[in-house]
Image (cartoon, rainbow, N blue to C red; front, side, top):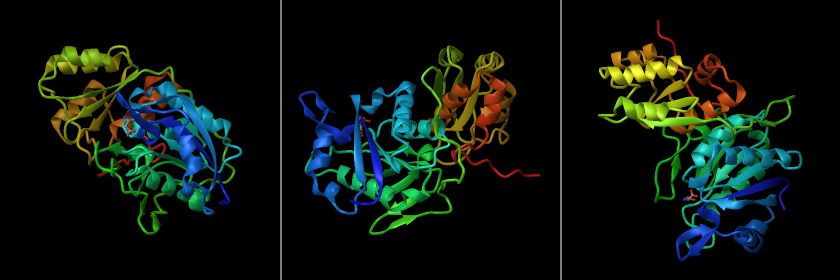
Length: 345
Ligand code: ASP
């Protein structure tokens, strides 16, 4: 056995599923059996594993903020006697869970790696073995130098809160198009140490911020969107991620639309603009359409992914009820999730 002890949290997803008459579905106990049987997991360079299977196992399409909180609490319970964490998760909402945990795990000083697969581990041809073995070896070899939530998938190590699912079929399902990879894993593990967040000395103990009670929404703008549709998105939520066109633009000539936005912001809803394009940043000062958003009370999410913006709003409203404070903090870089453009004179 290697020298480290890794806590493996199996939450569900294709990786441990089996074929049923109704398509792939989670199969309790199957992953544990495979981890016991497959020789790769018994190899001398592998870390010692503790497997925790969630009940119920979820297709990640069913994950909620309450589940993010539950995962965080399980990690906290086992933090003291493990050197790192591997979370096995469906790819569909993996980027949301990774982002949420990056915020909710306050004072994290150990590696948390999420992985999964496009084909279950039980199948003859599967990407699961590669993703699992690579993630475990990453923690075994480098875990003492890693202190953040990452996704390891398809030979890439990605910052969790910069990641997004880009492919529903290929083995490179997850990427971080708006941020460099933290590592590339081929024959060698090539890690980008200047980018990686390292453990701090004298850090306070790990805490998990409860996220389950917060209500945040997201709305992707589309041509012809009516004020009534926007109002429906903004109703009953504390904050909303507004996926804008280009560098942060919205239909500012639609007065009813802009008035709906203004009224919601005035009433305390925090609306954060992020770009629909996979690369670039929301620059609300660039176009008149962007400035109109600022006038309505919308704040910029800069280059955050929609996943990061949604989970960050969830986290911030779990910390405070004060919309002014949430508006301030959502524009700050808390966990490497955003890059603020340099100020120009
Ligand atoms: N629907 C599955 C899930 O997200 C897909 C996967 O695991 O990749 O749980």
